[in-house]
Amino acid sequence: RNKQEMPELPEVETVRAGLEANVVGKKIKEVKQLHPRALRADSLAPITAFNGAKIKAVKRRGKFMWLEFDRPEVLVAHLGMSGQFKIQKKSSEYERHLRANFTLSNGMDMRFIDQRTFGWLCVDQLNDGIPNVVSHIAKDLFDDEFNKKEVAKKISSKRGQIKKIILDQNVVSGIGNIYADEALWAAKIHPEIPANELSIPEISNLLTQAGKVMAKALKAGGTSFDALYINVNGESGYFERSLAVYGREGEPCRRCGSEISRIAFANRSSRFCPACQTR
Image (cartoon, one colour):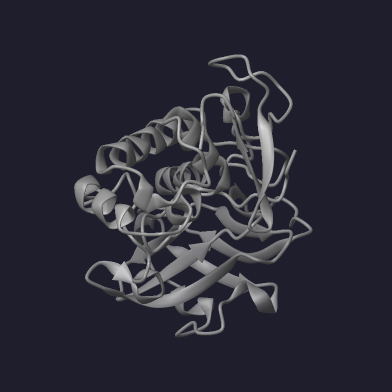
């Protein structure tokens, strides 16, 4: 099992929805930054700037999320490899990897915990409803304004391997290694085929499959391979049981029974069925 995968859209959306249910309408009473790297270098202010602020909304694009307040600044968060938000009683003991703590007006803490410190928080401003640090990120498949036709057309003009293109957060956001492998399997497309060798309907179907597999994962609370990805209540996602190819190399394909293969991809791996997903 590769336990180094970054939380992807379903995991981040699970956390966003959990935060939304627990923090919207609450005021921040006290803020503590407990690790220097918790704050991104280009943050407009320290996180203590949100002392006394009321949380109005929790939003997301791709793998980025942000809290909106009754003031112009927003708090952007990226979970990196192992970032978590937990809602806990103020009286409960601090976790070992606690990076930032926000005490809320209802006596609960919103805690940002990050074992590997690749995650970050950032005080930023909105530009057309999107934080500046997120402005380069493409719309994701769950965005009301996502235009599948336009994106499929854009992808079809690219020469790179199809898997590489759908992982590019500037083309379509939120898809990472796990759901790329799953979507390519569902669409019967080999991960190494150049994008410009696929038809627009094939690419469009691939995007549809990516949306379907992520919607299913979202229902299950995301995919967890270890204790690093959990929702705000400290529960792991359990979509792992439903994966068709990711982490299943050497096992039979759920569609045709052939053995799932694993090939090197960038500095990671791709899993696919050589019989269903031919070159």
